Length: 407
Image 1 (cartoon, rainbow, N blue to C red):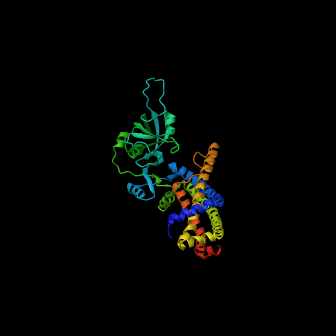
Image 2 (cartoon, helix red, strand yellow):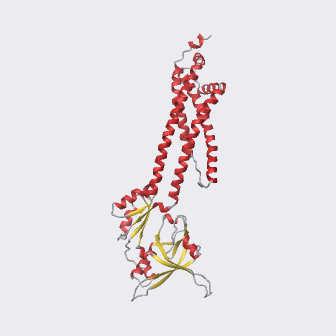
Image 3 (tube, rainbow, N blue to C red):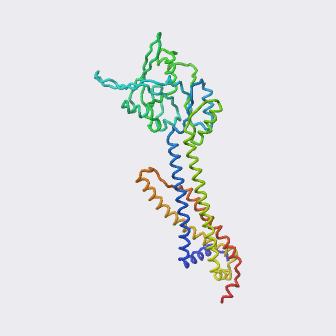
């Protein structure tokens, strides 16, 4: 007789008949499954929190070049072509990237002095800049982004107008010039905590040309067609896993760099250490669970040898009797896994609430994805299948005559 549906119904009925024993087996499995789920959830929650902090701050992706050299567009393109590169743009000398900002207000009261801010850092920006994600694109050279610190100091908002002021040392040419610019967006303080503005590359080059004396005015410098040369570059890796490889590539070109690589490696080391610790604990727990299940199934089978023999007498073949034992293991572990998942959900919620109350974290301390849960379920069923194999082999060798001897 080969009827899988009937076998599963009989297996379920048998478990219900011995429900006290079945309940004890489920509780024993839950005692193993729940702590493992909680451990994996805590590990994933902690590591994910650390990784999200790294990813959410673009500064962690930046690789800064030390010193000034001379690079052309071809070199910038070679950096851009590296698969680890997320964003790169040429940059000028630091001395050529400092300006004074003055807020332009419609106030006609001559006694009110316009707000201004000196020694403001200037950075080039372009499409794909990690610092300007979510901000509207700069449509022309006279549009800029400002950091929140600049906006706070000058009480600025998007759409306000600023006067960009430059001074240079020259005895034969005008040594002061201004350019009116418009604020197109504000860069979040967590991404750019300094007094900084971000401008288009043509405007940055115009500032350098003016300060170098290559042009009499900023307007003239903006119209320059000179081939640009860069003293350095703003470079960002594609992701945190690409920082090390990109920095090594730059170092092979004798370019000294600095980055947040140490912080990134620390997160990796924490992840590896937690994987090792939890792996050992999980292996120990799974091994103990496997041995316990195997012993329980064998003892239960020896107790029901007469029932197994009766099934054989009723026409169930070897494979069917073996499937009967495996089906009981699957049913028990499925119930235990669902119960363990429920207990995990309650405990992890209480843990998250406790940590939130202490302000230890603003995110979930313990979290499992759907993929993690599906993997845990497959491992649970796999352990149950392995544990039931020995019992299934013993059940196959039970002869129908054993039931007749008891009559």
